[in-house]
Image (cartoon, rainbow, N blue to C red; front, side):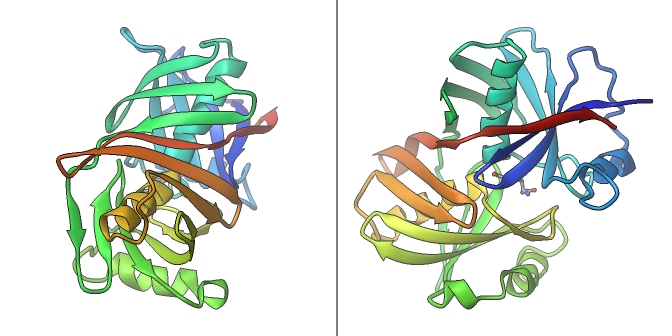
Amino acid sequence: MQQKFYKYQGTGNDFVMIDNRQQQFDKNNTKLVSHLCDRRFGIGADGLILLENHNDYDFKMVYYNADGNESTMCGNGGRCLVAFAKQLEVISDKATFEAIDGLHHAEINGDIVKLQMQDVTAIDKKANHVFLDTGSPHHVQFEDDIDNFDVKTKGANIRYGEPYNEKGTNVNFVKKLSDDTFRVRTYERGVEDETLSCGTGVTAVAIAMHALNETTSTRVDLEVEGGDLQVSFDIEDGIYKNVWLIGPAKFVFEGTI
Ligand SMILES: N[C@@H](CCC[C@H](N)C(=O)O)C(=O)O
C-alpha cells in the first residue's frame, strides 16, 4: 500500500506526519513506523505523528518514536503537528488538541508555534541532576564542556542505568550561558541517539534551572543544536503553570512511499 506523508521539523527535531483522519494507517505496525523513520531505507525522522479526528477538540495527536513504539509527549512534534493541521486547513491560527498527556492549547503565527505544556508539580532534585516529567521524563544535568561532550555514549549510560533502566528517560546536558539563557544537548529515548532538539527536554531544563535558582526569569532562552527555543511559565505555590514552548516549526517536503 502506498502511504502519503509530510515531513516537518522543529529546530531540527524532524517528524513524518500522516493525516490519519480516515483511520487507514496500520497503528500497531512497529516495523512500518521504524521503516518510515529510517534515514537510509525510509523517509528519515526522529519520530512519526498521526493527526486524527477528535469528537470534542480540533484533532488528536498520536506520537511514535523512531524505534516504532508509541511514546509519551513530544513537544517539538506537537508544535509541528499544529503547523501540519494548519496546512491541512483543520485549524486557522489557534488549536486545542488531545495528546497522550492530556489537552494542549497552541497558537501559530507564520513559522512560530507556541504550545502550552502540562503543569509541572514534581521536581526531584538530586546531588548531580534533576528529574522531572514535562509530558515525557527528563534527566537534567550540568556539563561544562558541552561542545566536546559525547552525548550519545554518556546519555545512553544514564538512560539505561539506575534508576531508569529499561523504561528509560531522556537525558539533557546543560550549560549556563547567561542569567536567562542555557545551551542544551539531548539524548532521546526511543531514538537512542542525540537529536538536534527536544521540546519537552528544553521545557524540563527551563523549569529545572528556575527550581535550582540558576535563573530568576520566567521566560528562558534555550540554545539547542538545531536552533533557538523559548519557554515561559508562571509559578503558583511551587507549581509551574501556564507553561509555553515557543519556536519555529517548518514544512520540509511531502511525498508518497
Ligand atoms: N522530541 C520530543 C520528545 C519525544 C519523546 C521522547 N523521545 C520519549 O520517548 O520520551 C520532544 O520534542 O519533546
